[in-house]
Structures are given as C-alpha cells and as structure tokens.
Length: 335
Image (cartoon, rainbow, N blue to C red):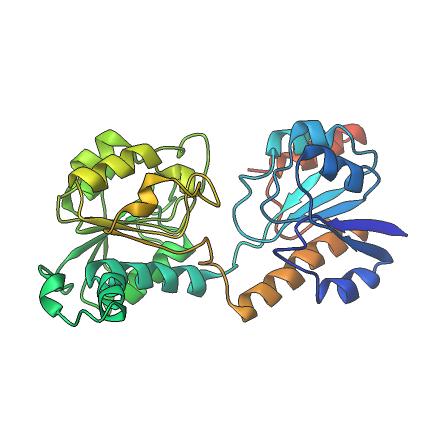
C-alpha cells in the first residue's frame, strides 16, 4: 500500500482525497507540520505529499527514501525547492486553473475598497460618525488606468471584470509568448511605463528570484501620488519596508493587500497602523467550491503518479529526462 501525507491539514483538511487515493491503494495521513524536522518525521517513508504553504526544502527531500510526487494545492510552487525535487527524481505538480474567479474577485474588491474608502467609512459609521465629508477626495473609476503586473489567467480575469467599470488596461509581462493572448483591449508596456501611468497597480506575478522585491523604493517612487497598489499575488513581491514608507509619506495614496512578507504579520508591524491600507488575511483563493476542486485535482495528480503515469500538470518537466537517463534512454526535447 502507498503512503500519502497531507502536511497542511489545518488549511486543507482532506475530504474528497480519501476516496480518490483509495482507488489506487493509497493510505492518506493528514497532519499539520511545523518546521523541517516535523515534516521529515511524518514523510520520510511516504510515496507522495499533498502540500500547501509548508516549505519543502532540499534538506527535507534528502530524508526521503521513496518519494514520487509532491502535489501542490494551488498554482504557485514557490514553497517547493524545484531543483532539489528534480535532482531527487520527484515530480512536482500544481493545479494551474485554481481560483481564477476568487482571486480576481478579491482584487476587484480591494480596488473598490481602497478607491471608494469603503472600510474607512464603515469604521466611522460604527463609531457613530455619520459624515461623508471624511471620505473626500474620491475620484471616479471610469476612464482611469489599471496596470496589471503579469498577465496570466487571473490577471486576464481581472482585466475582463475591470473593463465593466470603465478602466483602461495596461499590462506588463515579459514572459508572454504572444503580445495579447486573449481578445481584450489591453496595451502592453514596460514596467516603468505601467507604474508611471496607472491609477491602480495590481500585482499578479508568481514569486521567483526575479520577482522578489520587484516593487521597492524606485518603483513606488514612479507611481502617481494618487495611485493605489493592490497585491493578491505573493507578499515578498513587494518590499514591505519600502511600501510602508511610500504609504506613510504619501508617495502613493493607498494599498489593498491580501498578502504580506511575513504571515501572519507581527502584531507591532507599523504597516497595520496605517489608515490608507485595506488588509485581508491571504484568503483571496478561497471559496467552498474552489477548495473542493483543488483538493480533487491535487489528489488526482498523486493518483496518476502512483499508477505509473506522468502527471498532467507537471511543473518540473526536467525530471522526465532525469528518469530517462536512469533507464538508459535518450534525452528528449521537453521545452
């Protein structure tokens, strides 16, 4: 019997996974791991892992004796050392069509909340202060420019929805193979141009070595003093100390943040004291429907591997050539 360990059971307590994995003779163990040694203790003899936010490092992978696949509940795989997984011959999978509507809806919610000052007005009314003058100034959205940093499926969903509010759309994405992959009226520009022209900048890039702190002091200085920054991607894409300074000193008007560099934030983090920021607790991906779907799709990837198949949503395709080499077969072009 195969052993599969779900190491983020607090975030994704298994539901449909039991039945899917039982079909391939797999026993599922659900735990919530804290730290490398706890992950090692629970997974050293496992055949597969279902993971969410817990980091999976080279040190952890060195303890595994028969691991075949790491299946990520979600799109991003920045919590997994991909090179180490490839070196150890381990498949890494994701669910690339997860939560488009949920994250794009959250991005639009944050845009509306910060530009219309919804949260600030709500707090005043709760304090029995019924004074719309406290909201001044607010500017209309129609005709304003929304800049999307990265233009994957979630950003494309944001663009479609934002057009209904009358936004003009700019996008920056150096990795697109075609300038406009969808039938949308979007202008593709350099990052600097996007930052200078946009009234709202919404971040949708994955976290990589290249994108870590891609928004820092120079980039925030380029933005309009009336502009807003929205981040539903990954916290470390933004230099949080630089963002605090920009918000405190009025380089930009405000921000809507679903993600932070450190999660949960330190209770004394000064960013939490600012009135021109709306926070949500890294929940943008959540809906009951999306979380059920991602559970099933991640588990099916594991089931594929345990049946001896190549998983459909394989991230580290370089592992295929490693496996071919181990079998004495020729390398193939996997680009």
